Amino acid sequence: MPDFLRRHRLIPRLVLIWACVLITVVVLRVTDPEVMAVIGGAAVATIVTGVIGILATVVTFYRSKPGGQ
Image (cartoon, rainbow, N blue to C red; front, side):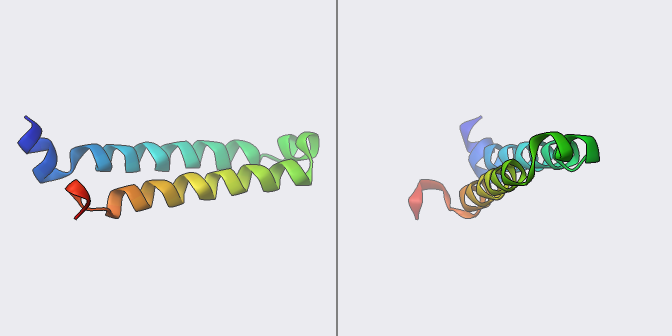
């Protein structure tokens, strides 16, 4: 089984899909007009920064080769 996971890069792909779903849900909830009015501009900026950080981390993880090569 580990050979299957390594060959098809299953774990990085699952993490990438998870991050895309998480980012989509967060962006859809934060950009709701009622939510934006309640949390304010600075909090929206913090949330957007966190979303970009999650995406950057996951893409870097996905692009890295197994074994650090």
